[in-house]
Every structure is written in C-alpha cells, then in structure tokens.
Image 1 (cartoon, rainbow, N blue to C red):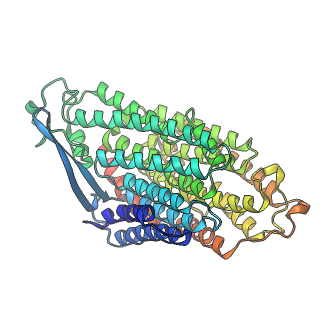
Image 2: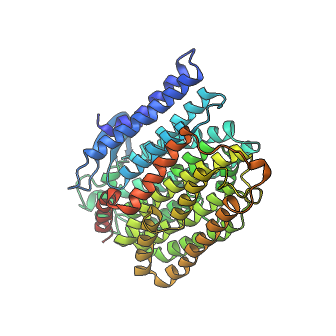
Length: 517
C-alpha cells in the first residue's frame, strides 16, 4: 500500500482505538487523537518529499477492491472499491488538512469534557477530509464526503454553545443536499462516460479502448470524457450534469444564496471545530469544482464562465458587505471566508493559468488564515467571555501578543504583500482580468471592503480604552503559542516563498489546461 493509504488510515485507526479501548482517561484520548493527526502529517510530509515533479499523474496509489456489481451496464461489471492517491492539486490540501487537524487537537482546552467522543469525532472528520482530497474514484470521494459530514455534525451538536443543536441540523441539511447533488452529477458523469447519454451505441464509436464500460475511476473518466465525441456524450447532457455539480458546489461551499448555514455553524461551534470546518472542510466544494468541473467538463466551465464569474463577484461583494455589518467576530470571519472563496469562482471561470493557480492558492491561504483567526478570537473569548466586537476594546494592553498575532492574521486576510493572502488574490485577479476584465474590476471593490471591515474590527477590539474587567487578563499561554506561531509562519512562508506549494499546483494547472484545450 502507498503512503496515501496510511495517511487516511492513521486518524481512522486512532478514532477506533479511542472508542473501543476501555479504561482510557482524558489524557489518553487526547494523546491518541494527537498521535493519529501527527502520523497523518508525518506521512503527508514524506509523500511530499517523495513527490515526482516530472509527472502530473496520481502518485502513491493504493487500490482496494470491495465488491463487484455484475453486468450493470452494457454487460460490463462495475468494480467498487477504495482508491487513493495524490497529485499536484490534492497534496497541498492534504498537508493543509493534516496540519490544521493536529493544531486543532493541540488547541483543544484541557478542561474539555467528553474527550472520548470529541477526539473520536475529530479523528473521523480528519480521515473523511483526507479521503476526499485523496480519492481516485467517485465511490471513495462520496464515501469520504459523507464521513466528514456526519463527524462534523456531531462535533457541532455535542460540543458547541447553546443553540448548537439547531446549527448542527442546519449544517446537516445543507451539506446533505450538496452530497445528493454531487451523487447525481458524478454518477451521471460515469454513465455519460460509458455512453449512457449518447445518440449512438458506444461500442460503434471506436473512441478509445474500453469505451462503453462503466467505471468510477477518475483518471479513466478524465481520459474518456476528454476524447469522447458529441455523439457519445451529448453537449446538452454535459451541461445539465455540470449545472447540477455547480449547484452542489454552491451549497457545499456556502456560496450565496446558499450561505446561511456557515455563519450559523461558526457562531455556535467551539473554537477547534471552527478551525477544522473553516480551515479545511469548507474547501471540499472548491476542490470538487476543480477536480470534476475543470477536470472532467472543461468545455462546460468555459461555456458557463460568465455565470461562474458573476457568482464569484457576487460572493466577493456580498461577503464583504455582510462581514462589515457583523458584531460577532465568528460571523465576521465566516462572511469574510465567503468573500475570499468567491475569488475561487472567479479564478476557475477565467480558465487560464493565473486564475486556476490563484483559485488553488486561495483554498490553502483561506484555510490557514481562517483557522488562525478562529483560534485567536476563540482565545480572546475564553478570557473575556464574549466574541462581540462592541463589547471588546483596549485588549492590546493586557494581551499584546494575542492582539499582535490577530493583527497579522487580519492583514494576511486582507491581502497584505508577503502574506499568502496577497499571493492568492493577485493571481486570481490577474487570471480574472485576462478573461473577464469588467466583472473582475467590480470584484476589486470587495478587496477594498475587506480592508475596511477587518481594520475596523481590529480597531474596536485591540485599541481604545480597555474595560476595567479586562485589566490583568492573561496573554497567550505556551500551549496557545504552538498553533498561533505555526499557522502564522505558514501564512508568511507562502507569502514570501509561494513556490513551496506553487510548484505542486503548477503541475495540475498545466494538466487541466491541456484537458481544457
């Protein structure tokens, strides 16, 4: 088995041990949880060290056959199993997920109750997210997506604040709808690649060897759909399936108008759950758009490019205006994330090298900055007992280090040069201006607004007179320095040396552009 198989399996093993081994105390639950995430991170770093930059194909491939559905289509069998691997698109996201999972485990408070359940669901969610990013077939992708969905639901429901039950079911409803849409679109693509929506029989086309056989294997589907004629898979069927996929992405990624579940989820979830959801779980929709939209249906991405670009700019502007109106830091971060992820849509719509690379960078940058912002504001809330911006003020005096790191995170989020936010935003806009200059120009307003709402929130939080009750509050503890420093260092590393992940993304960008012509 390749390294990627063990990357996914490590947190899953930790989750099972936490659940079934009797007599474990809270410290043992925590240790097993951290061990599972740490093992996944070490293995992901090893896969990065062994990565071959000479090819854009999947590497460290593992395939496990489960069962076969006989004569399911055109008298051909359908093999069902689990397939894992990484390429230039998925490996940086695997590293992101492993890093944030480990840091979230470290950041969990020592006073945490029901540690067995907490670390069990945290490791299951981590395994599911890693499975989504490493899936090499549609069945593995959908199974891993559902695992991450249910694990995150229980994290929100069991460990959130008052009102978390409603937030958890809202989360489950929206993300469950997205899963149904993904299922319809991806199974439809598999049947389309087998000639199910063609005007002539697949066995008379002579397109490629194996045409007409039903498969869930992503590389095979990519090759088949790239070479298939319009008679084999009609343009109308392609467009319908792409629009279903796009709708699933809009719901999964909390894009307007399907965004309401995300601010509610973040408002009522605990800090470490917010780090995991905001840092990596909300990147699965954008990943699906790149992997299946651009990767399997590039012609439809180009055809519907104006719609995608307009939706991206709507999210950039709406997210920024909504964030400006928020009084709670957690809701502000949620709407800011929606605004930033609108740049992913703009970059994908551009369908050029700069746009696609900017979209990929934005997923990683937004993940790091969102996790950092949630952790820092969570630390402040733990001391002040509030996340309401009007109730804060003057915190730079009692908490200079937390306030300083919060300022760095805010500057990175608004796209200050030498931070990951700048690298992702500049590339996405360069790509956008190259294809849709007028639409992209409107989107620039959102970047200006991000500076307004973030600096306004910082001024209200850290400057001005401090409340009497806040004097003497403790600054960052040694435990809190670990996630703070690591996340900040990664934001600055990518900003100063973007090639650290840019070379990986570049491989997938070149492959996607070759597919899209």
